[in-house]
Amino acid sequence: MATSNSPSKRTLCSGGVLVGKVRVPGDKSISHRALLFGAISEGLTKVEGILPAEDPISTANCLRAMGVVISPIRNGEVVEIEGLGLDGLKEPDDVLDCGNSGTTMRLLMGLLVGRKDRHFVLSGDSSLRNRPMRRVGRPLKLMGGEITGKADGDFAPLAINGQNLRGAVIGTPVASAQIKSALLLAALTAEGTTTVIEPAHSRDHSERMLRAFGANLEVGGEIGRHIIVRPGAILKGQKVIVPGDISSAAFWLIAAALLPGSELTIENIGLNPTRTGVLEILNQMDANIEVINEFEVAGEPVGDIRVKSSELKPFIINAEIIPRLIDEVPILTVAACFCDGTSKITGASELRIKETDRLAVMTRQLKAMGADIEENPDGLIIHGKKQLHGASLNSETDHRVAMSLAIAALLAKGDSLLEGSEAAAVSYPDFWKDLDRLHK
Image 1 (cartoon, one colour):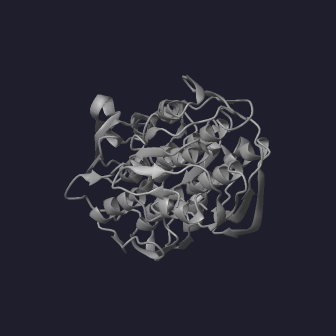
Image 2 (cartoon, rainbow, N blue to C red):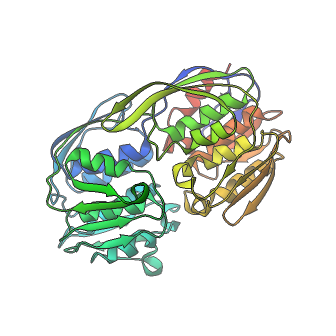
Image 3 (cartoon, rainbow, N blue to C red):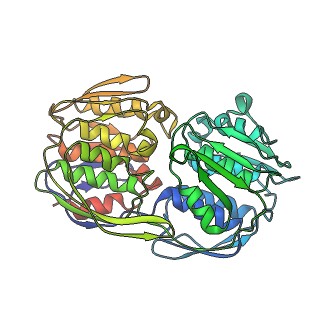
């Protein structure tokens, strides 16, 4: 057994090996989008492999409050969505509760801002209410949207008064799939063509899936940074198969690469090139990984990844690759602690406005284990190969921090105690069960 349970605190045992096969939960980004796009399509959408975790459930509950019929989201069950068409969403009777999900709130902003003569209020838990939203609201206002909130619309609760939108050419301030996706959703009902221009190529699940549902969408420009949407197309319900989330797979990839004698196969993983930065970094580190059994589902490349333990080299992560591995930085920070040399992460200031300030939290928690880390405004410098020791740790309510610290604890000397282990359920409800099963 790798761990022992309590409602919040969990003992993490060091040492051992990781052996076997594992299927991680469905991709969170694709799960959100399947729900949202199915809701505004005509006909039935069936989604297989959807992530049955808190964030997608928040999206589903918000859509249900606006009249969308969605079957229960349960592990192993196909989810059915009865679409209402592009303009069928109803004004809800109450505040739309986005829980802890920034994706839910930001994409709903784009979805709802063009619903003329309907009023919506978006809120969430205390963590979400302290995450910035103006970066989405400001470009939506360029299309004629009306969004108000605390601190000039930067924080929820947010009030949205639906308007007739106009197409526009909009450059996003950062390479963010959430900002881009909100604009693409708004563009579906705008009057005239909308062009979204990114400073770098962020994950492109929205573009791929919108085209599959029938949207009139083109991608062009340098490395696909210009996305053009022409309104008027009717979206049709689809069958969607959600691959495993590479952000969840990253914990096992790095754990098995680091823990001597380990060998794992992570099955059915989404290999979208806008998401595989973590594989590029693992190759830079000389990790013993191999992609096998590759195939394609609904425009998304999928495959299995086999990983064996090996000696890892330090790495450099810069702003160019950050959009392709933004969620994997916490676990890569752990990996850096066990590489022989100094690793550097720059261009990662976006991590300060996630569920927590992940740069600060990972620095604080790993230092408690004896790690040698320097925190900078936009990144970290990690001096590796210093023996970590077991410690009292805290996820600080962040799911990716919780799972990253679990892997750090496996590699430390002596056992650790993790407070807030339940946070992992946000994106990986069975993480602790899988850890117990794979840890020998």
